[in-house]
Structures are given as C-alpha cells and as structure tokens.
Amino acid sequence: MTHHEPSGVPSEVLLARAIATVARSADPDAALATLLASATAAVGADHAAVAMWDSVRGSLALAASVGYAPEEVSALEAEVASNPDHPIARTAHGQTAILGSESAAVGGTMSTQATLPLRVASGGMDEPLGALAVSRAGSWHVGEADAGLLAALADLIALAIDRARLTAAAQERSDWQERMAHTDALTGLANARTLSRVLELEVARAGRQGTELSVAVFDVDNLRAVNDGAGPAAGDDILREVAAVLAESVRLVDTVARTGGDEFLVVAPGAAGMTVARRVLDALAGRSAEGRSPISVSAGVARFPADGTTPDELIGAASAALLTAKSSGPGTLAAAGAA
Image 1: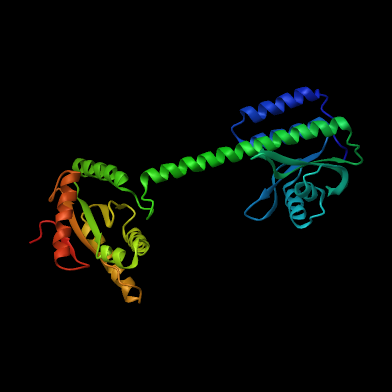
Image 2: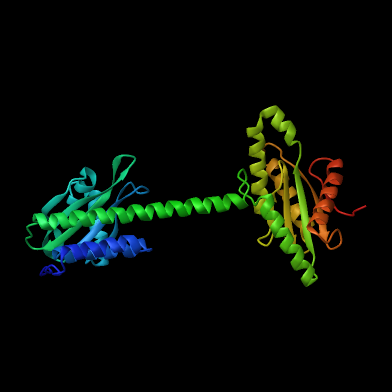
C-alpha cells in the first residue's frame, strides 16, 4: 500500500473546517468521521481511529474510524482492549503522545502510527477520554508540524466527544423530567395529573362512539396500621407491590395510576372494569397464598354512561362503590349502583 500525500490544503484551512464541524454539526458520529478524515488528509495518512473508554465494558472501544475495513476495525479493537502495550492503549492510559511507532500490519503492510491523547478539562482537572490514532503505510517521520496539527485535531475531537456527552446528558435529564411530570415517583405508574387527562379523553371518546367505559378505584386495606407498626418504608414496599400487580393485571388498553396515598385508579375502555378489578384482587390473593405477607385491596367500579357521564361523576360513583366494598371487609369488590 502506498500512503496518501498530504492534501495540499493549508493547515489553517483544515483547522478552520474542523472547528466549523465541531461548532455546527448536530450529528456526533458524522462530526467524528469528518474530523478523522481531516486528520488523515492533513498528514497524508491512510487510517485513523478514535478509541474511547467504555464504562460498561471497562475497556477501550473504537468510537470511529476511517480507512479500515469492518474486519480490521474489529481486530484492532480487540487488540487494543486486550494488549496494554499497544500504542493506542498506552496513550489512552498514560495520556502521553507516542509519535512514529510501528503498528501491526494493516492489509498486509506495516505502518507507522502516531497516537495522541484525548482529554477535556473537568472540575479543574484533565479528564481522559481515550486516544486518537493516525497511521501511514511505510516509514513516516512525524515532524513538529504534523505533531502540532494532529494535537490540535485531537483537542477538537475531544471537544466534539465531550459536547456529544453533554448533549446526551441534557436529553436524559429532559426525558427524566418529562417522565417525572407524568409518573408517580414511588411506583412508576401514571400520576393523578396524567390520569385526569386520560380519563377526560376516554370519556369524550366513549361519548362520541356510544361505547362503555369503566373506572375502578382501589384502596390498600389496613395500610395505616402497617405504617404505624412497621414504619413508612414497609408501607411503601406494599404500595410498590400493589402497583406491580396492577400493572401486570390490566390490559394494554387500560391506564393504571396512583392517585393518592394508598389509592389507585384504573381506566378501562369497554365494560371490563369488574373483570379487571377481580383479576387484581385474585392476583393479590394468590400472592398471599404463596406464603408471602398478606396484602389485600378493596375496589369499587363505575361504568359510563350508566353511573356517570363526566370524569368527576364516574370517580365519585366508583369511590362510593369502594366505600360499600370496604364496609363488607378487606379484599372486597363492589359495583356502583349495586343493591
């Protein structure tokens, strides 16, 4: 293999293009590919790769490369991960550039490689990210000009990686905040705010289509006694377990939410409310039969339009049915309007 000659584009122009890539690219993978292409073009190299620390695997992994065939990428990644003496691994660990080392054969040809550290400042200290490796077929004297240009490109690559991490972290925070706005923090179910909106939409749809809709209200029996006797943590465990049983027992079309301290509500399109509620009570009874601490809930069910035509009316009717159920003892189910 004959190495490529430098592109002939002045280094300041290459750097300007690289800076523009980091500043304007919204695609981290595309930005890395462009920066690696700039690195190879700047010094007439044949191959370039970025190795980054993979926190999941606990080793270095190739995040981007140019000039390598897929099987060569896999082989290089495996060697870097398993061989601490590989120049890429040494640079990533020691954060010191290694210029002009002979690398393993690529496509049957020995190459000369330059490896440079990737790092960013974090909390007043340098945070190692990995290493940039640029290789050229045959003998290559990495002079001061090449070394300086590659160092500048390595810094830009590190900046692009750090920017991508910050963007990902910001998106994760945004997703988390969005989830928290719609879910109950203790159980992971929908919260009262989300339930209110779902019930409003389902009532409107049932009214338009002339179909039925069921609302089931569940209350955990004797939770106050558990909190008083064993402490709030034990009560929270019960609430989480009830929530899990509810989530497993309802249908895909149903919505289950925690609406109060020990109260849950299910919105079930159609006339299946009593069936869904009975399934929940049976599941909890089966759980206790397996030898675990007994947990029971009482439930009241109301139907649209027979028991109410607005969300408030349906919840009121289901809550009244719940009181009827609780008056009959724990683990009881009652329907609104039942004699």
